[in-house]
Length: 422
Image (cartoon, rainbow, N blue to C red; front, side):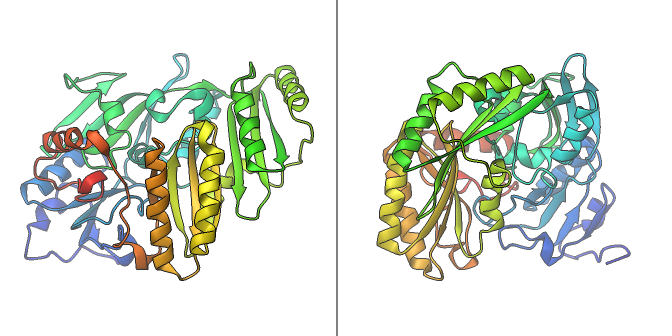
């Protein structure tokens, strides 16, 4: 569609078009099945703050979009009038390679950032889903951590500074590269995983790591999940320093453990040999095993995709629960779980949606009783309004609601999408 957007008489949209580029929304701009009226494209942190302030004044419900790879995560929004695109916030502000830090805008695609950092032999030590399309802001908002978390820590450990736009029109900066502090809040950690419910992320500063000289993956096929879990725990208890470990399993599928080593060639080969001594029968990997988590989404179909967390010692017990649910509800399942206990699960039940819903509820209750969690990330359309996404927030929910009230008192940001309907 070309030309100026048609201005609705209900709200002074012409004011907004004077703040940042504005266009009519299309079906492709939907979030959780809700289509907004307009899409705004701010190009600076100040424009982003002005857009949110306009929405706050007129009580316009807002959601943000980066690369659009995780728009289905979370509950469907209760309301959605305005979608804010971060496509215009796509600059690498500073790469202080001598200090091994980088400041990037939220609309930068992760793969583009990595390519720029690689020119100086550095990287952001993350392996998120769909890195070619996913943006830095979306990555932080959803707290998407991959298998590299084992060695380098989670996103909350890598982010050292952030610039955010708040609904009251404030541009706040916290952490590294400080210009203006917000006393009392660790904004980098607070905004990581907040799903856009507290404010808009404009920029983030990260600490970096050197690119490894080489890397190699040891893949072992195990006869059963108990053996695989023991091998994974043995690796964690050893003096080896893998960058990542994951276990792949599924109903009536072979079970594998993948171990990634990075560093100088001699060090990598030494660790590969020591791993082979612990576990005979190295299996040549078919394709790239580290894309297995991403492939669960690629092959989702009419399945449910869920993220889960548990203790590494509980992996085999959880798989036993999955086998039990598969038999009871006629399900097919496949999972990829990292050595940190974070994993992704795909459950499919053909078109037996009621069975899928009951199985999710049963699995969630079992995991929560073990101290874990299960969060639904993708559902068939027929189940979107019938299955609770997040599960129990426990004693943290009152605090989370107070934080939401502090940052977004009018409740315009992603209303209803987060834990407890926040």
